[in-house]
Every structure is written in C-alpha cells, then in structure tokens.
Length: 185
Image (cartoon, rainbow, N blue to C red):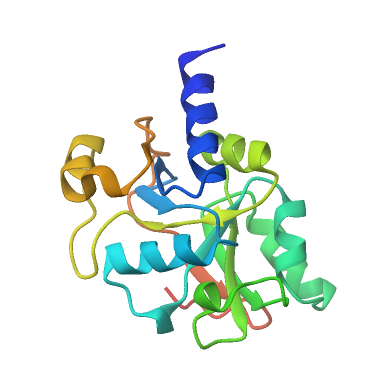
C-alpha cells in the first residue's frame, strides 16, 4: 500500500470512529467528519465558531452519495449540476429527510459538491457516503495554509490531519442554487 493509501485509510478510520478530519480539497484544507453524527456536526460548528444558521456543505466522491441527500428535482436542475461535476462547484438543492438539521441550518436545503480531488474521492468512496466540507478555519479568520498551522490551532480536537497537497484552486468553491443557477458565492 502507498503512503497516500495508508493516510486515506487512517482518515477513514478516524471518521468511522466519530472523529474530526482535516483534509485537502480543491482550494483549501477542509474540516470534516460524518454528517450523520450530531456530535460531529456540533463539534465542527463549535470549533469554527460558525452560526448554526449558515448550515454546512457536504462533499462526495460519487453521485450516488449525493442523490439520497436531495429531494427529487427537475432533470434540468440536476443536469446543470452534473455539467460542473466532478468539480469545484457546490450546488444548493432541496434537502431530503436524510439531511440532519445541523447540516441544513434553518433551511430546507443542502449544499453538496461532487469533488474531483482524488483524496476526497478516495475517502468518500471508502466510507460510501458524503462528509462535511467546511474550510478549516475559525469564523472570520484566514484559512491556515499548512497542516502544522492547523494542528497548532486545533491540537487534539481533530482526530486526523491528512497532510497531502491541495487541488490547485486559489479560492473556495462557487456556490449555486439549483433551479435558477444563481451564484450565491
């Protein structure tokens, strides 16, 4: 097994045991974990000092990880997202009943992205579900650019730091609303 494979396996084990994970995404290091575990969601919101009203993004490695999270929508709405996936665009869809309140915030929607980052894809494929994907920073602060800075920020509050390269984008994903395609970020 390669060093990357071993690191991904350790990251997956951390998530499976309810731990938080810092991992590379297309643009920044992400803070994530199992969105289905209330304590994981609460811990991420607490660490980031993020208001619950903002909700959280979920990232996946396969369209099959996303479809159960969204309500059935017009084929054109899904087709618009599929034209940008896998990729660096997050789409906001009506949420299915499987999406926890802490992920949605006060909304009836869920923000989802089908990642093209090979590490994210590998993690989600092994878990066979999406994970939380929010920038690994505290609210209002710049996102640290390397793992030692992140480890100094959160120390033992994160179960595993996956120190692998970012995907090469210089800004967070664009966020669009399914239906009208409006750019929200």
